[in-house]
Length: 379
Image 1 (cartoon, one colour):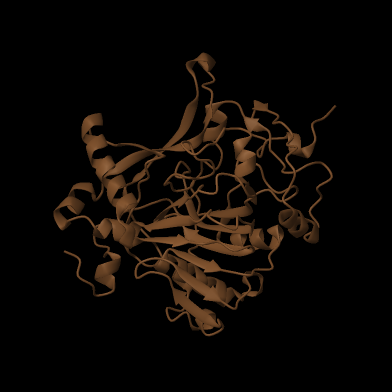
Image 2: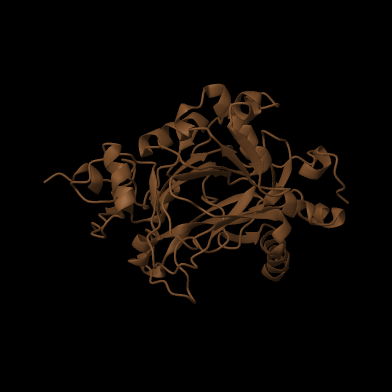
């Protein structure tokens, strides 16, 4: 019997794969209502899982090509008047990161407003919209406007809508046990998809179901983290590159007994955002391996200090309290994020996520910092 669509890998180039299990976890009522309203077929189970690649060489070749990325934020009117004038209220949540837009529906934005939203995200790092009437299909359509939507080779997605992945901590807990000392979900500082040749740009997470207490998400600014470094220390890391690796593992085709292997890519540890032209720190503790050209001890010292700066300075972070039907759109090129699991799975949390892949990371020595561009002290 030929395999069904949900038993196939995401690309026909994947030669060897494993059909994943079907899940039986009951959907939260609010999530089910949203999916049914959108016409999602739940009759074959939820979520849908692609057949995952078995070997590292197949996984590495996924999207392993140079391609053009059109940066929509770079095309926007710098005033962002079409977007901001249409909102009932624009709330900057902290001085350096995070803005909430009140009174707009993401599905109804014009292309001009979408471009201006991309620029606002590039400037403020993460932008929030509450009370969204948004289907997974509409969420994916917005992501496709910003570029190529990432279709993950392992992660579960909405049935019939590949590229709209599921963020459901209770489902993750069926695969990896979580408890107070070892929290579930994405409860560690990280940046998504750094192992891609063209890593993640804008990610859009829509949470249709959230706990009444807890479950906040935190973001930290890579622009501000870079400016926390002294000018002389910046010279040490400017132009340096690091090895980044995937969260998911695969086997070595030539030595399957060698244990799990990860996809690795090399990117600059300081990158420039193409819409703003500002420098940002681009490292994260979970998926940065080492700095190219340095001994391990040297690399570890520098990277651990950079992680510390990025993670521990609360003045460059925003902590967001979710409400049902809220969307967060952030730029992975200039942020890290961390989802609090303080509710410990006592209430359901469910959302859908769409990530657009961006340009190949680059460094420009002449680019300014955010603070320099805004006329703020930066020495």
